[in-house]
Image (cartoon, rainbow, N blue to C red; front, top):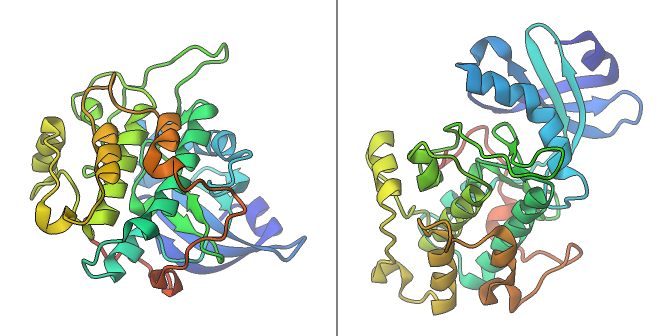
Length: 304
């Protein structure tokens, strides 16, 4: 562990673990305020894409989170020969994947789902306004603070899609998680920020279906094939009571034709979102699953 990190922060218990590292509680030596520290072990990075993502994570996270109240905030970054350490906002509530799993197949009602989808759409739109695509929007990366306010987290796959002059820069790396990745990524084509809108549509679908994703298979390859076909269906046994407006929004987000897929800003203006409205000061609807203690790993194995 880096000398500067342990000089400035008291490192506490482990609260999470991922593919490349571990997340622990920490406390500022100067203020006593608690944070989370995400420590990434460099030797576990599998390839050049992973190394590039880690190298730029702190910079891109700062850019995406600046002024974005729906993004987890980053406070410090440290690097040594073996590790990268990111000091982040401490979010102790269950993630959205845990909340979906805790309902044991019972879908969110539209009243419950709408404020969360709206908040996540605003988080994504705020990133896009800053020229950042998250590229791994999924329930595991949707966290909640102590008041139940949604925070988009884990910018390890994020990338800038505009240059210093404001010009569009296409992205090419195949990153993301099979259930949530967009068809243009699977196809190996250049892509832009609308990959996040596709992933947002998958998240909304899963909330309203009780955890069933719109495109999946028994293996990652079969899932990618299903994503590439993009044959979106709303089984009546699950979606019988879901409104036409909600289905229309999902169709417009989970649209293979990029010219017809909504942007994040257009999602915010869709009637299903806009009819209720939202502000950053709005009191969140308290779902019982928010009272769960956050486990060390996801309850939904296929969420990740």
